[in-house]
Length: 132
Image (cartoon, rainbow, N blue to C red; front, side):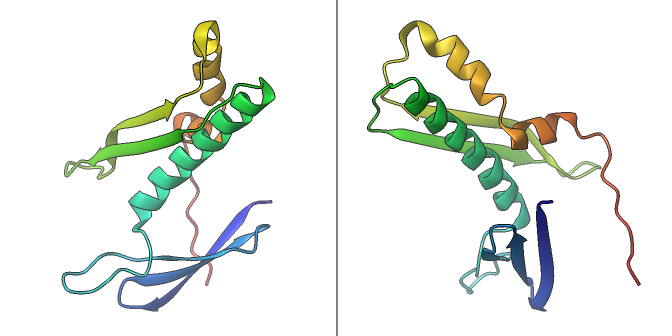
């Protein structure tokens, strides 16, 4: 099982302990005049999506022995103010100097196999429960 345990620390700062990786991260909401301790939740979501696609891109390029010096991913979206508040118009830009040639379409299809991408696209219900 993949799990993230999130604990309130102070102000808008939450500690995140992830497993099985055992990595600790902080989520924060930037305040004027204060340096954030970590990304806000929406930035973390975009980073997860872009990071997963980046890992998939690297995997494809290495598996097919396609040399590259540059591999960058930009994930962006717009925050809607209408209900339900959410990110819309998500766009993932992948930049690489690898010579993909006729493999470009297969490469793009492979990137869409990223589990974060598939979770965003195919999850129609998230159960939220109160543990008292």
